[in-house]
Length: 401
Image (cartoon, rainbow, N blue to C red; front, side, top):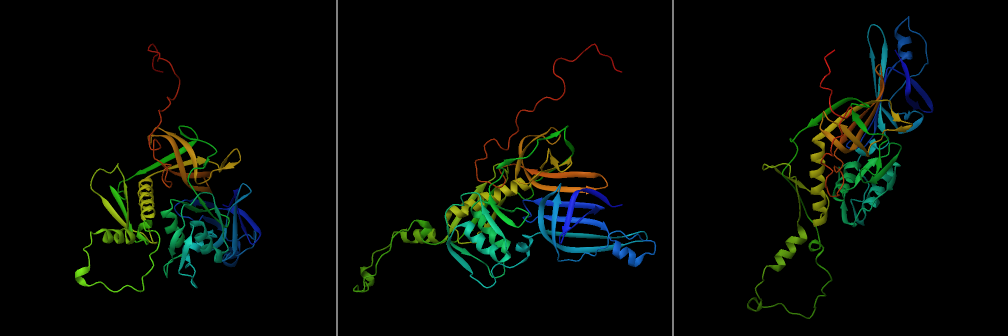
C-alpha cells in the first residue's frame, strides 16, 4: 500500500509522494548522493489487470531530471538512472533509483579533449577545470596549501579519480553538496542537531570493528622534480669552455647522486601505532609528488583505513530534530555503553528512509580524525561515562516484588 511521508520526489516539475518505500542517502565515502523509491505503477497495472484502479497516470523512464525533498527542503538534485518494473499475481510496481548530478563525475572521463596536465595550479583550480564541462560549481572552504607543480590527468581516468588523487595529497575532504555543487572542506566544522544516546533517542545500534585493512606502516612513493624543492637558481652555460681531459676530472663525493635521488623520488610514511605486528603496505602516488605531498597522502591513507575499520550505525526516529535535518560531516556526541563509545564522533553517512515501519534516519559514524590532518590527541579516547539512573546508595531493606 502506498503511503505519504515527508520524502517527495519531483520529476520534471511534478511531485510524487505516494510510495511503498523511499530512501535517500548521502555518504562521505561514496561522494555522490543517491535515492531509491518503490511505488505502484498505475499505468502498467491498467495495461495488465482488468481490476486495476486508475490512480494518477504516469510512466517513468531513465533520464529525467529529479529532485528529492525532505520536509519541504531540496536535499538532492540529479537524474533517474535505473527503472526496474516488477509484476506478480496481485500488483505491478516499479523501483526507480538515481544519483545527484556529481554521479556523472564518477562514470565519465576527465577532459577527453585535453589538456593532459595542469601546471602550477592549486587544488581548487584543478577541480574547477575538471568539473566545468559537467556544469558543476566548486566551493572552497579551506587553505589547500601549495600549488601542484604538475597535476597530471591519465588518459582513461574518470573525472572523480582525477579530483580525488589531488585531494588525498592535500588532506582535503571533497564532497558533493547534493544539489549540483562540489565542496572542498575539512571534517566536523558543524555540530549535528542532537547527541546520540543509548538508552535515549537511539532505537538500534550496530557496530563493526576490524583490523583486516589496517597496516602497521603505510608508505607512499612517487616521483618529483627540482631536487625535492631544494635546488634553487640556474647556472649559465660557458660557451667558451673546453671539455676536461679524463685525468683532470675530480672524483665526486656522492652529493650529486644524492641530490638527484632527492629530486626524483619522494617517500611518505605513516605509522598506525595500534597495529603492533608487522603489516606494511605501499602505494604509488598518482601525481608528481614531492616529499610533503607523499607524506600527506600516506597519513591520509592510514587515517581513512583506520576509521573505515571502526564504523557504527545508529537508527533514530524521524528525519530531523526541531526542524534541522541530520547531515553528513557533522560532529555528534555519542553516549553508548553497549558499543563502548563516549565521545564526539563524525557522521559519515545519512540515510533517510520511509516504509511500513515509518520515517527514520540511519546514521553511520566514525572517529572524527578520519579525514583531517589535525593531531589525534584525545579524539580516539572516551570521556568519563556518566552514570545512568538515580544517584545515592541502594536500599538494602527492599524486597523483591
